[in-house]
Amino acid sequence: MNPGADRLAEVRQRIADAARGAGRDPADITLVAVSKTHGADRVREMLEAGQRVFGENRVQEAQEKFPDLKSAYPDLELHLIGPLQTNKARDAVALFDVIQSVDRDRIAAALAKEMVHLGRRPACYIQVNTGEEPQKAGVAPADIDAFVATCRDTHKLPIVGLMCIPPVDEEPALHFALLTKIAARNGLSRVSMGMSADYETAVRLGATHVRVGSALFGARA
Image 1 (cartoon, rainbow, N blue to C red):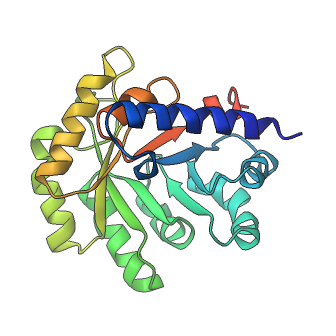
Image 2: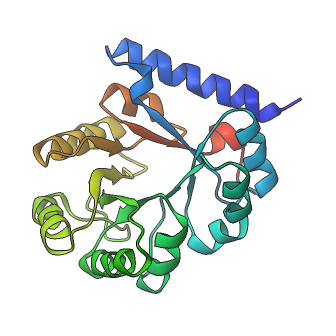
């Protein structure tokens, strides 16, 4: 028995239902299984059930779990969804296939340098602080267009999309709609938004990637 398989099937079904209800193709939405704080054995459960895209918050934790898993499953795709420090930029470029949390010029510059050094170019998303919360990472909505241009033109980063984490005490739909609008005007096709409590809403409002943890893995360890 693989208990993760049942949870995975349920989440996938709910994504598909939300997509169809919005007139979208379910195949256009990627489920990112957020495995932070859960061990490699739990990730392997999900891999055996057919999941291939995973998200981790911390570079060091991912380094402990994923090199062996990526060797065993070459089609595994690993996303960094947590904040990144400049001193971890090289490790992040070496391990992750996608970096969703580009949020300031120093990180953009560090990532660009390491991509040249390592000859590896993980796709990048810019994190937008849609709620303009002072304690939260991300670029303010008023500054995002200029930052996208800087990342593209100055740092030559492979920017493919935007990511947000709405304030916990506000209606997430407002933030999801805003992120989709910002992405569209910047010609970005990927929008990472929605977590276990609100991923169906995110799908209805244009998410291409949803980041689901507890609905798949249960409560954090």
